[in-house]
Amino acid sequence: LKADLTAGPGDAARGKKAKGAVKNDAVQCLALCSLANIAGLELIQAMHVEVQRVLVAPSSTEQVRKKAALCLLRLTRTSPNLLSGREFAPRVANLLQDQHLGVLTSVMSLLSCLASQQTPEYEGLIPHVVHILSKLVMKKNCARDYLYYRTPSPWLQIKLLKFLQLYPNAIENNTAEYTSQLINVVSKIMIETDVSESINKSNADHAILFEAVNLIVVWGPTCPVEMREGAMKILGKFISVREPNIRYLGLMTMAKLAQIEGSVEGAKKHQATVLVSLKDADISVRRRALDLLFVICDTDNAERIVDELVAHLVVADASIREEMVLKIAILAEKYATDLRWYVDTILKLISISGDYVSDPIWHRVVQIVTNHPQGDLQGYA
Image (cartoon, rainbow, N blue to C red; front, side, top):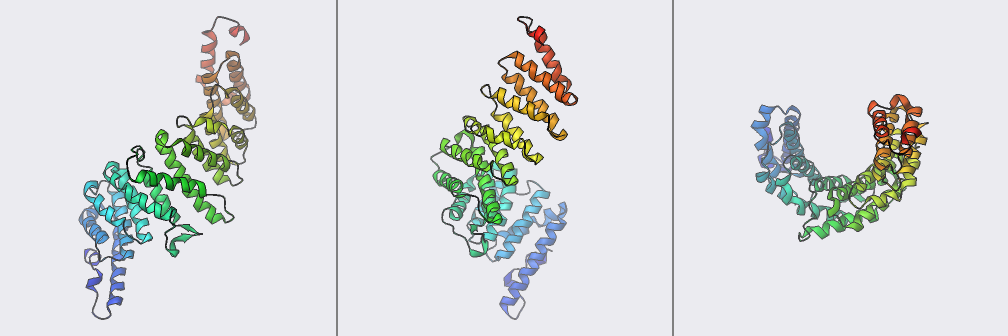
């Protein structure tokens, strides 16, 4: 393995140089694939330095560098903390300057894994990642082979955005040179993404869009308010489309976005649409709608949301009833302005879905009634 791994193009057999180089490329690639598939701990310790050398060697071809990056990814997954972030980060910085999008895609897979293990050590690579993302989104700088339904390398864009999600404070320091560039890139992704007639293009574009919105969610309060509002507006459009996958993702992402301070009001504007999704044929969409209603509920809209949930409980599937009962009980107690309404709600739960009402729920209503001797609450109950 070691001999084949280090067999560079310069070691080509005598004869036609180009043919020998191709032959040695194949040998190196096979050695890297074999090492990745075996990936025993002893073999990893003995060979990982050689894989690193092949990855960064100027003589390695694009095909070999791609294989080396993916091989090293497999080795680091098998043996975490195999590489020192402080020492390896400068090498990754050089690899990110490669012009070949296939190499960049493989390197980003490796970088995402490494950064998830040693996040602070790879923070210095954010400017390189933003630069690549900017070239793809703003300048559409992409080789024809990597255009997917006129979208420049969507897989690479997604990997770049996922890497940036590891750094929630990336735009907190507005003095950083890349901050404005990154905000412009994310804004353009949100503005230009729309539903396409081509399902493949639509899926690729929406995958990028949802990762961009997830990045906004990760930034939280440090993200500009207009970007959060723009993201909420786009999600509001997507939760009303016919395509269930987009609707599911829209509901799930909106629930995350609504939890950021100051964003729940934007989500409440779509309350009627979310309530319609609660009656969707797809159980997974109904679950996401329930989660979103739970997030946007407050004193102002609690009675309407809870009453709608109780009414829907009558026809709800058994698979979602227990979760609905628990959420209704929590919301009714948390936002009750009238204890009579709270008692009514819990008694309705018991009458409609008594088998799914856990002991703590009815214990709690008994406790509240017995602790309020003033007035006529006990008599009413």
